Image (cartoon, rainbow, N blue to C red):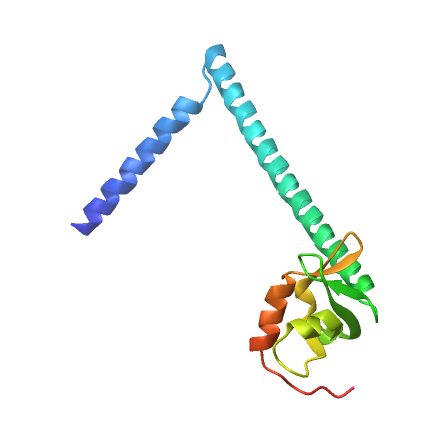
Length: 162
């Protein structure tokens, strides 16, 4: 029973394929123009696909280039004594040391920032470089001064040797 079904299916597929081949095969001028139109449409589809792939590649290159440019600008701006501002434009401190391998920057807090923090004795903090950006040649954090103060107050403390 199983053999018959397979044979019947194979025979049906073979007949369908032969019928399709006869339908596609040009027999007169009208069929040639339809075949030619189908071929032209196929070429346009391929060309459109290639154009789309090219556009995606160009967009990826632009994005990668922009990210590389932003990283280079940040690396250049992270110099000793560079001023760091919060996202609301307030000065929070200056860079005292960078550890680019560890993605960290040690920041000496501004006097006003130290006074805003309820925790005593906090003068230097470590910030991750990915939380910073360069905007109009200014180092900026991705948080406001109040958000940074809250993070410092609730975060862990460690002693760092100079």
